[in-house]
Length: 341
Image (cartoon, rainbow, N blue to C red):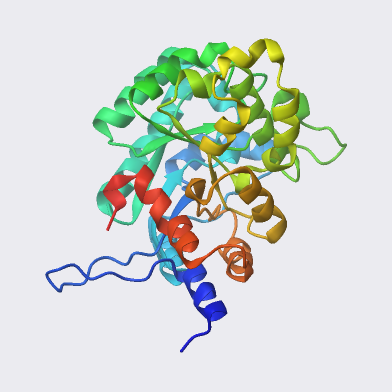
Protein backbone atom coordinates (compact mmCIF):
# COMPACT_ATOMS: atom_id res chain seq x y z
CA UNK A 1 0.00 0.00 0.00
CA UNK A 2 1.16 3.50 -0.79
CA UNK A 3 1.81 5.85 2.04
CA UNK A 4 -0.35 8.94 2.24
CA UNK A 5 2.60 10.99 0.95
CA UNK A 6 3.05 8.72 -2.08
CA UNK A 7 -0.66 8.82 -2.74
CA UNK A 8 -0.72 12.61 -2.69
CA UNK A 9 2.20 12.72 -5.08
CA UNK A 10 0.42 10.33 -7.42
CA UNK A 11 -2.75 12.40 -7.27
CA UNK A 12 -0.83 15.57 -7.99
CA UNK A 13 0.83 14.11 -11.07
CA UNK A 14 -1.96 12.05 -12.59
CA UNK A 15 -5.14 13.83 -11.54
CA UNK A 16 -8.15 11.89 -10.43
CA UNK A 17 -7.34 8.63 -12.25
CA UNK A 18 -9.78 6.82 -14.52
CA UNK A 19 -13.49 6.28 -14.12
CA UNK A 20 -15.79 3.49 -15.29
CA UNK A 21 -19.35 4.24 -16.38
CA UNK A 22 -22.25 2.00 -15.37
CA UNK A 23 -22.11 0.19 -18.72
CA UNK A 24 -18.67 -1.18 -17.86
CA UNK A 25 -17.05 0.48 -20.88
CA UNK A 26 -13.90 2.48 -20.22
CA UNK A 27 -14.56 6.23 -20.00
CA UNK A 28 -11.95 8.73 -21.17
CA UNK A 29 -9.27 9.22 -18.51
CA UNK A 30 -10.25 11.70 -15.79
CA UNK A 31 -6.80 13.30 -15.67
CA UNK A 32 -5.97 16.93 -15.22
CA UNK A 33 -7.62 19.77 -17.13
CA UNK A 34 -4.95 22.27 -18.17
CA UNK A 35 -6.42 25.77 -18.48
CA UNK A 36 -3.14 27.43 -19.55
CA UNK A 37 -2.02 25.68 -22.73
CA UNK A 38 -0.95 27.67 -25.77
CA UNK A 39 -1.41 26.95 -29.43
CA UNK A 40 0.83 28.29 -32.21
CA UNK A 41 -1.09 28.04 -35.50
CA UNK A 42 1.32 27.87 -38.46
CA UNK A 43 -0.68 30.42 -40.44
CA UNK A 44 -0.56 32.77 -37.49
CA UNK A 45 3.22 32.50 -37.30
CA UNK A 46 3.45 33.34 -40.99
CA UNK A 47 1.22 36.38 -40.58
CA UNK A 48 3.34 37.66 -37.68
CA UNK A 49 6.81 37.29 -39.29
CA UNK A 50 7.60 41.01 -39.14
CA UNK A 51 6.76 41.22 -35.44
CA UNK A 52 8.76 38.07 -34.66
CA UNK A 53 11.84 39.44 -36.43
CA UNK A 54 11.48 42.78 -34.66
CA UNK A 55 11.41 41.11 -31.24
CA UNK A 56 13.97 38.40 -32.09
CA UNK A 57 11.69 35.63 -30.86
CA UNK A 58 11.33 32.19 -32.46
CA UNK A 59 8.22 30.20 -31.49
CA UNK A 60 8.62 26.58 -30.50
CA UNK A 61 7.63 23.96 -33.03
CA UNK A 62 4.02 23.09 -32.31
CA UNK A 63 1.10 21.08 -33.64
CA UNK A 64 -1.97 19.49 -32.06
CA UNK A 65 -0.19 16.13 -32.29
CA UNK A 66 2.78 17.48 -30.33
CA UNK A 67 0.43 18.76 -27.63
CA UNK A 68 -1.41 15.45 -27.44
CA UNK A 69 1.81 13.49 -27.09
CA UNK A 70 3.02 15.80 -24.31
CA UNK A 71 -0.36 15.70 -22.57
CA UNK A 72 -0.47 11.90 -22.62
CA UNK A 73 2.99 11.68 -21.08
CA UNK A 74 1.94 13.99 -18.25
CA UNK A 75 -1.53 12.76 -17.34
CA UNK A 76 -3.40 15.64 -18.96
CA UNK A 77 -6.87 14.72 -20.19
CA UNK A 78 -7.86 18.07 -21.70
CA UNK A 79 -6.14 21.38 -22.46
CA UNK A 80 -7.87 24.70 -23.09
CA UNK A 81 -6.02 26.37 -25.96
CA UNK A 82 -5.16 30.07 -25.92
CA UNK A 83 -2.98 32.41 -28.05
CA UNK A 84 0.70 33.06 -27.44
CA UNK A 85 1.31 36.61 -26.25
CA UNK A 86 4.63 36.97 -28.04
CA UNK A 87 2.89 36.29 -31.34
CA UNK A 88 0.10 38.75 -30.81
CA UNK A 89 2.08 41.58 -29.21
CA UNK A 90 0.56 44.91 -30.28
CA UNK A 91 -1.19 43.67 -33.40
CA UNK A 92 -4.34 43.23 -31.33
CA UNK A 93 -4.00 46.79 -30.05
CA UNK A 94 -4.89 48.35 -33.37
CA UNK A 95 -8.41 49.20 -34.43
CA UNK A 96 -7.89 47.67 -37.83
CA UNK A 97 -8.91 44.91 -40.16
CA UNK A 98 -5.53 43.30 -39.51
CA UNK A 99 -6.29 42.82 -35.81
CA UNK A 100 -9.70 41.38 -36.65
CA UNK A 101 -8.13 39.07 -39.24
CA UNK A 102 -5.55 37.77 -36.76
CA UNK A 103 -8.17 37.10 -34.09
CA UNK A 104 -10.37 35.25 -36.59
CA UNK A 105 -7.41 33.23 -37.94
CA UNK A 106 -6.46 32.19 -34.42
CA UNK A 107 -10.02 31.31 -33.42
CA UNK A 108 -10.89 29.36 -36.56
CA UNK A 109 -7.75 27.26 -36.19
CA UNK A 110 -8.38 26.55 -32.51
CA UNK A 111 -12.00 25.65 -33.11
CA UNK A 112 -10.98 23.13 -35.76
CA UNK A 113 -8.56 21.50 -33.31
CA UNK A 114 -11.42 21.20 -30.81
CA UNK A 115 -13.73 19.71 -33.45
CA UNK A 116 -11.04 17.16 -34.30
CA UNK A 117 -10.44 16.29 -30.62
CA UNK A 118 -13.47 17.44 -28.60
CA UNK A 119 -12.53 15.51 -25.45
CA UNK A 120 -8.88 16.60 -25.49
CA UNK A 121 -9.05 20.32 -26.24
CA UNK A 122 -11.06 23.42 -25.46
CA UNK A 123 -10.74 26.98 -26.78
CA UNK A 124 -10.26 30.40 -25.24
CA UNK A 125 -11.01 32.66 -28.21
CA UNK A 126 -8.99 35.83 -28.87
CA UNK A 127 -10.55 39.28 -29.31
CA UNK A 128 -9.14 42.23 -31.29
CA UNK A 129 -9.23 44.61 -28.30
CA UNK A 130 -9.19 47.55 -27.90
CA UNK A 131 -11.36 47.47 -31.04
CA UNK A 132 -14.77 47.44 -29.33
CA UNK A 133 -16.97 46.77 -32.36
CA UNK A 134 -14.63 44.14 -33.75
CA UNK A 135 -14.50 42.45 -30.35
CA UNK A 136 -18.28 42.38 -30.01
CA UNK A 137 -18.55 40.73 -33.41
CA UNK A 138 -15.84 38.22 -32.51
CA UNK A 139 -17.60 37.33 -29.25
CA UNK A 140 -20.76 36.56 -31.20
CA UNK A 141 -18.82 34.45 -33.72
CA UNK A 142 -16.76 32.68 -31.05
CA UNK A 143 -19.77 31.60 -29.00
CA UNK A 144 -22.53 31.15 -31.58
CA UNK A 145 -20.50 29.65 -34.43
CA UNK A 146 -17.31 28.22 -32.94
CA UNK A 147 -18.82 27.19 -29.57
CA UNK A 148 -15.75 28.48 -27.71
CA UNK A 149 -15.31 27.60 -24.04
CA UNK A 150 -14.28 31.11 -23.06
CA UNK A 151 -12.28 34.20 -24.00
CA UNK A 152 -8.55 34.90 -23.67
CA UNK A 153 -7.54 38.49 -22.91
CA UNK A 154 -4.19 40.15 -22.22
CA UNK A 155 -3.56 41.87 -18.93
CA UNK A 156 -2.94 45.13 -20.79
CA UNK A 157 -3.31 46.68 -24.21
CA UNK A 158 -0.48 49.21 -24.56
CA UNK A 159 -1.71 52.00 -22.25
CA UNK A 160 -5.04 50.46 -21.21
CA UNK A 161 -5.92 47.81 -18.64
CA UNK A 162 -9.12 45.72 -18.67
CA UNK A 163 -11.01 47.85 -16.15
CA UNK A 164 -10.82 50.85 -18.48
CA UNK A 165 -14.32 52.19 -19.27
CA UNK A 166 -13.48 51.79 -22.97
CA UNK A 167 -14.00 48.04 -22.49
CA UNK A 168 -17.36 48.24 -20.70
CA UNK A 169 -19.47 47.21 -23.70
CA UNK A 170 -17.29 44.13 -24.22
CA UNK A 171 -17.57 43.06 -20.58
CA UNK A 172 -21.32 43.69 -20.62
CA UNK A 173 -21.67 41.23 -23.50
CA UNK A 174 -19.37 38.71 -21.82
CA UNK A 175 -21.46 39.04 -18.68
CA UNK A 176 -24.62 38.36 -20.68
CA UNK A 177 -23.02 35.16 -21.95
CA UNK A 178 -21.78 34.02 -18.50
CA UNK A 179 -18.28 33.95 -19.95
CA UNK A 180 -15.07 32.50 -18.57
CA UNK A 181 -12.28 35.04 -19.20
CA UNK A 182 -8.65 33.91 -19.01
CA UNK A 183 -6.07 36.67 -18.47
CA UNK A 184 -2.60 36.06 -19.83
CA UNK A 185 0.18 38.48 -18.82
CA UNK A 186 1.42 41.16 -21.19
CA UNK A 187 3.52 44.29 -20.70
CA UNK A 188 1.98 47.74 -20.89
CA UNK A 189 3.67 50.41 -22.97
CA UNK A 190 4.70 52.11 -19.72
CA UNK A 191 6.97 49.27 -18.66
CA UNK A 192 8.93 48.07 -21.66
CA UNK A 193 12.66 48.50 -22.09
CA UNK A 194 12.98 49.62 -18.48
CA UNK A 195 16.48 48.11 -18.34
CA UNK A 196 18.88 48.55 -21.27
CA UNK A 197 19.21 45.34 -23.24
CA UNK A 198 16.44 43.50 -21.44
CA UNK A 199 13.73 44.51 -23.94
CA UNK A 200 10.20 43.18 -23.47
CA UNK A 201 10.94 41.19 -20.33
CA UNK A 202 8.55 38.84 -18.59
CA UNK A 203 10.93 38.11 -15.71
CA UNK A 204 8.87 40.12 -13.21
CA UNK A 205 6.81 42.43 -15.40
CA UNK A 206 4.21 39.82 -16.34
CA UNK A 207 3.45 39.13 -12.68
CA UNK A 208 3.23 42.86 -11.96
CA UNK A 209 0.95 43.45 -14.94
CA UNK A 210 -1.32 40.68 -13.65
CA UNK A 211 -1.66 42.64 -10.41
CA UNK A 212 -2.33 45.84 -12.34
CA UNK A 213 -5.17 44.08 -14.13
CA UNK A 214 -6.75 43.10 -10.81
CA UNK A 215 -6.32 46.68 -9.56
CA UNK A 216 -7.88 48.04 -12.75
CA UNK A 217 -10.92 45.76 -12.53
CA UNK A 218 -11.44 46.43 -8.82
CA UNK A 219 -10.93 50.19 -9.04
CA UNK A 220 -13.58 50.46 -11.76
CA UNK A 221 -15.99 48.01 -10.13
CA UNK A 222 -15.94 45.61 -13.10
CA UNK A 223 -16.42 42.36 -11.10
CA UNK A 224 -19.48 43.72 -9.27
CA UNK A 225 -21.08 45.24 -12.38
CA UNK A 226 -20.53 42.06 -14.38
CA UNK A 227 -20.87 39.29 -11.77
CA UNK A 228 -21.58 36.49 -14.28
CA UNK A 229 -18.03 36.63 -15.67
CA UNK A 230 -15.57 34.14 -14.18
CA UNK A 231 -12.06 35.65 -14.32
CA UNK A 232 -8.97 33.40 -14.34
CA UNK A 233 -5.55 34.87 -13.46
CA UNK A 234 -2.31 33.15 -14.51
CA UNK A 235 0.68 31.93 -12.49
CA UNK A 236 -1.10 31.55 -9.13
CA UNK A 237 -2.11 35.20 -9.37
CA UNK A 238 1.37 36.57 -10.08
CA UNK A 239 2.00 39.54 -7.79
CA UNK A 240 -1.67 39.68 -6.75
CA UNK A 241 -1.09 37.48 -3.71
CA UNK A 242 1.76 39.68 -2.46
CA UNK A 243 -0.11 42.94 -3.04
CA UNK A 244 -3.66 41.88 -2.17
CA UNK A 245 -3.59 43.16 1.42
CA UNK A 246 -2.31 46.50 0.22
CA UNK A 247 -5.06 46.68 -2.43
CA UNK A 248 -7.66 45.85 0.22
CA UNK A 249 -6.34 48.36 2.77
CA UNK A 250 -5.71 51.20 0.33
CA UNK A 251 -8.75 50.83 -1.91
CA UNK A 252 -10.12 54.38 -2.39
CA UNK A 253 -12.94 55.03 0.05
CA UNK A 254 -14.84 57.06 -2.55
CA UNK A 255 -15.00 53.92 -4.75
CA UNK A 256 -16.32 51.51 -2.14
CA UNK A 257 -19.86 51.75 -3.53
CA UNK A 258 -18.59 50.11 -6.73
CA UNK A 259 -17.76 46.92 -4.81
CA UNK A 260 -20.73 46.40 -2.45
CA UNK A 261 -19.27 43.16 -1.05
CA UNK A 262 -15.77 44.55 -0.63
CA UNK A 263 -12.41 44.02 -2.28
CA UNK A 264 -11.52 40.82 -0.43
CA UNK A 265 -14.78 39.22 -1.55
CA UNK A 266 -13.87 39.80 -5.19
CA UNK A 267 -10.36 38.41 -4.71
CA UNK A 268 -11.92 35.25 -3.33
CA UNK A 269 -14.23 34.98 -6.34
CA UNK A 270 -11.44 35.20 -8.91
CA UNK A 271 -9.93 31.98 -10.23
CA UNK A 272 -6.18 31.34 -10.29
CA UNK A 273 -4.13 28.74 -12.21
CA UNK A 274 -0.81 27.20 -11.20
CA UNK A 275 1.49 27.52 -14.25
CA UNK A 276 5.14 28.03 -13.25
CA UNK A 277 3.99 28.88 -9.72
CA UNK A 278 3.63 25.60 -7.86
CA UNK A 279 6.20 26.04 -5.11
CA UNK A 280 5.18 26.56 -1.46
CA UNK A 281 5.76 30.34 -1.42
CA UNK A 282 3.30 30.87 -4.27
CA UNK A 283 0.71 28.30 -3.18
CA UNK A 284 0.77 29.21 0.51
CA UNK A 285 0.16 32.85 -0.40
CA UNK A 286 -2.62 31.87 -2.80
CA UNK A 287 -4.32 29.71 -0.15
CA UNK A 288 -4.36 32.73 2.17
CA UNK A 289 -6.18 34.74 -0.47
CA UNK A 290 -8.62 32.35 -2.14
CA UNK A 291 -10.38 29.07 -1.33
CA UNK A 292 -9.30 25.82 -3.00
CA UNK A 293 -12.49 25.95 -5.07
CA UNK A 294 -10.93 28.82 -7.07
CA UNK A 295 -7.60 27.14 -7.91
CA UNK A 296 -7.08 25.45 -11.29
CA UNK A 297 -4.27 23.48 -12.87
CA UNK A 298 -2.34 25.29 -15.62
CA UNK A 299 1.04 24.68 -17.24
CA UNK A 300 2.02 27.34 -19.85
CA UNK A 301 2.90 24.52 -22.27
CA UNK A 302 4.49 24.66 -24.87
CA UNK A 303 6.24 27.87 -23.78
CA UNK A 304 7.24 25.98 -20.62
CA UNK A 305 7.62 22.27 -19.99
CA UNK A 306 5.10 20.46 -17.81
CA UNK A 307 7.77 19.50 -15.29
CA UNK A 308 8.32 23.15 -14.37
CA UNK A 309 4.86 23.11 -12.81
CA UNK A 310 4.13 19.46 -12.06
CA UNK A 311 7.37 18.71 -10.20
CA UNK A 312 6.90 21.35 -7.50
CA UNK A 313 3.19 20.56 -7.27
CA UNK A 314 4.02 16.91 -6.59
CA UNK A 315 6.17 18.00 -3.63
CA UNK A 316 3.62 20.37 -2.10
CA UNK A 317 2.07 19.15 1.15
CA UNK A 318 -0.52 21.86 1.72
CA UNK A 319 -3.49 20.23 -0.08
CA UNK A 320 -5.62 17.25 0.88
CA UNK A 321 -6.60 14.46 -1.52
CA UNK A 322 -9.96 16.18 -2.03
CA UNK A 323 -8.18 19.48 -2.70
CA UNK A 324 -6.03 17.83 -5.41
CA UNK A 325 -9.12 16.34 -7.04
CA UNK A 326 -10.69 19.79 -7.17
CA UNK A 327 -7.57 21.55 -8.46
CA UNK A 328 -6.65 18.91 -11.02
CA UNK A 329 -10.11 18.56 -12.45
CA UNK A 330 -13.23 19.26 -10.39
CA UNK A 331 -13.01 23.05 -10.33
CA UNK A 332 -12.48 23.16 -14.10
CA UNK A 333 -15.45 20.84 -14.62
CA UNK A 334 -17.64 23.40 -12.89
CA UNK A 335 -16.40 26.10 -15.27
CA UNK A 336 -16.64 23.87 -18.35
CA UNK A 337 -19.50 21.37 -17.78
CA UNK A 338 -19.01 19.73 -21.19
CA UNK A 339 -15.70 18.30 -19.90
CA UNK A 340 -17.29 16.53 -16.96
CA UNK A 341 -16.72 12.77 -17.09
